[in-house]
Length: 260
Image 1 (cartoon, rainbow, N blue to C red):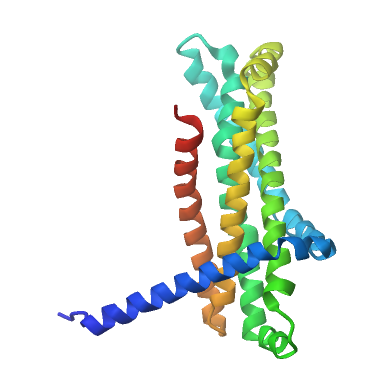
Image 2: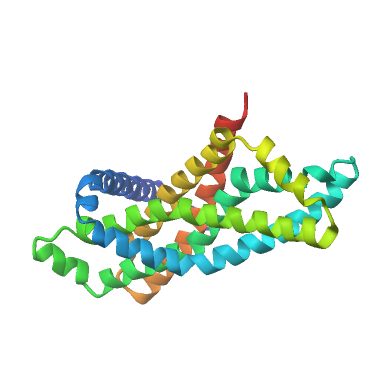
């Protein structure tokens, strides 16, 4: 049986703390680029276009099918209690409060997040980042910051698309296929959804998830070993760490927003 030596434990702890410190320092540096990044908004705009196009199709299609499933399951659940007319409200609240921000963030991490990690990791492996530093060009300012702020901006927009497609999917199943009254479907949404409490909190969630997922993706790429194996390992860590962070933050934010 092999035992860990105290020196091994100390080295592992020191390594983790050093990585945590580098991550915190990078996050602060990214936040400090807010003003300068938007002065050169063209770089941010290009990344918004790239990240949005890269993720839009899978998020829209996923939202539609989630709406199909939830409309079907929600109808038969509400039917037991004689409340099938509230299907629109149930689908909408579930999407704008929870499923929209959370599922969008998970899909974004798996699609755009891994792309960001691989891109930064390959630039590091190709010594492009080292060359920029030798030329006195800050890679955080020039490479990471536009991608970071683009991810923060893109996430709420994609979450809105997911929720809208989910509501349409719920309407198709509930109204067109099952026969729920269309007027009741939309009137329940209009009367029961609070813009600030429900939609607003969903937007806040998606912004927080945008910060989290994009930062984790960039950090993993920036910290990746400069080898093909290191880049592959970093992309895997991006999905795992970002997914766990999103689910954990979702619980914390929900407890803060919707509990009295």
